[in-house]
Length: 341
Ligand code: NAI
Image (cartoon, rainbow, N blue to C red; front, side, top):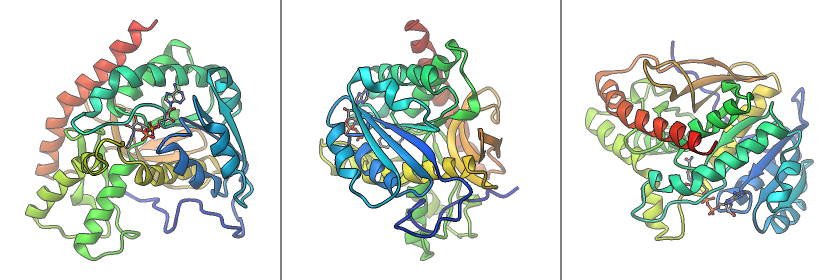
């Protein structure tokens, strides 16, 4: 089977007072870490999403200002801010989707793994509250290191007997967004038309662009495939360096998370054949319990995992090299979680 794409042809879910034909448009989305570099532009893109009627914003700081600001935008979503740990559960209550960009970003010279000690406990505590307050919510996690943090989230949910692996997602959409942009600029095709599947995980060793299955049949020479693969793997670091100590990708990440959330919403709303890739608990690759692949999304989250599909020799080698790194990251996540209980 070919990878199918559910890529929007415009900004995800953008409403700007357009006529709404969707069967359901009253979903509640909660953003945890809403005052940060990603959280603020993500909040704005969600405020203009026509499928959202309620947007709750939670952070340890500054959320009331962000919420007041966004609430003046002339779209139906009602915005409410929550600040401080004692407000967390209230922010999450009855949410259909919880998106988590809370946690430290990288500085130059840091790898995503360097963030683990700080961000592991942030995600653990936030997900524990989701388990107690909105156990049916779909959870989309942006916080790095994605490869280890998603196993933590799943372990927390498992311990609370609330794990439904169809509902927990590591948001890797930015890797796809970047691959599409870079390939489009090289091939002259509009970036809105290109779809390059990216599988594996979310770190230089584990991001695996699958050019052999890019649509529409984009021809990229072998040399260019190597250069582009390297650029996509290291694109996050390109931004970290350019920002020179002030953080990592925020605006493109907010766009990617808005696109991903919009796909979750379309699935919840009953739309058919919504396909989006994500790093999830999975058994599509032998001997590895988490892997990013294209997924069909529906009313309960993952409806079907489309798997890695057919790969060429170059891509198979990338998978082979990624597996031991991913395994180690997953073990770190699972092990650290058991320490907390
Ligand atoms: P930031 O530092 O600008 O914002 C983080 C926000 O989280 C802050 O407002 C902070 O107050 C809040 N926060 C921290 N601990 C919290 C807690 N326990 N509860 C609620 N809020 C809390 O960071 P930025 O740039 O927004 O990045 C956020 C995360 O996203 C980082 O871990 C970064 O590495 C990751 N990221 C992931 C990408 C991906 O492709 N998945 C791409 C880019 C960044």
